[in-house]
Amino acid sequence: MFETRNRGQRIALQILLTILVLPFLFPLIVMVQGSLQGQGWGNYRVVLDVPGLWRFFLNTVIITVGVVLLVYVVAMLAAYGFAKLRIRGKELFFWLLLGCLTLPEVVLLAPLFVTDLKLGLYNTYWAVVVPLAALQVPFAVLLVRNFLEGVPDELFEAIRVDGANAFGVFRFLIVPLTRPIASAVAIFTLVGAWNDYLMPLVFLQKQSMQTVTLVPQFFQGEFNDDQTKILASAVLTALPEIVAYLFLQRHFERGLTAGAIK
Image 1 (tube, rainbow, N blue to C red):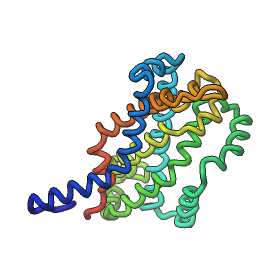
Image 2: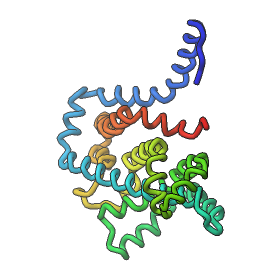
Image 3: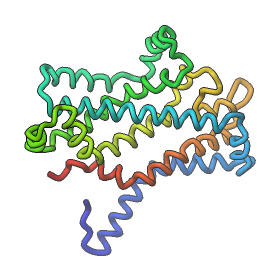
Image 4: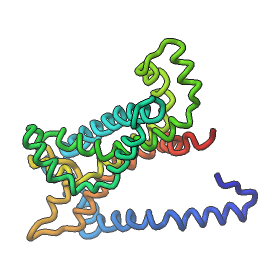
């Protein structure tokens, strides 16, 4: 935390923070301005009149919730095992898991496509939920494991003395203790799942199954490229996650700083 003792330091800090924020605000400002060109607010009316738009939002919510829940359960259990359980070769497994962070999403499309066809998952929510969750799990495990390693071992020994087994420790100790970092993981996962474009594009060919990130394709084609409508749909797509972040901002900041002060 910055400590400002006088007005001059506060002004200098405000100027510095403003300069740092501008590169992130500029694309958003350009997006909103571009969406209001041409027909102005009429661009948004056209986007809202897209057939099945609210179904696309519902599909996105279902996929996002599924990814967040799956990442939470898997990441918490895996991080608990890597941080506090005695497992032979767990460091090797942990580094193999981190190696998955280097895999780009596009290289997985071919094997996932074949797997989905064989399992009958093509054009289902699972075809998107499982791969997106798998891509998010390594980073989530890294965050939660680092947090759990800062928790004193005496707490785990005390609850084991009281008769709790491994799953009892997870339920009554891990889950309550990891709420701050779990909030940060949930927000990271939510943003990644909500904004994903490639997986729904490839694995959800039925129009009734598509997500809101695919709405711009209604305004772009071989003989059509209406950038104002595309930008308007991008603004509408971003609004729910912006609102979610504003409501969860306090928990997100606590999660990122959790464990920083022992």
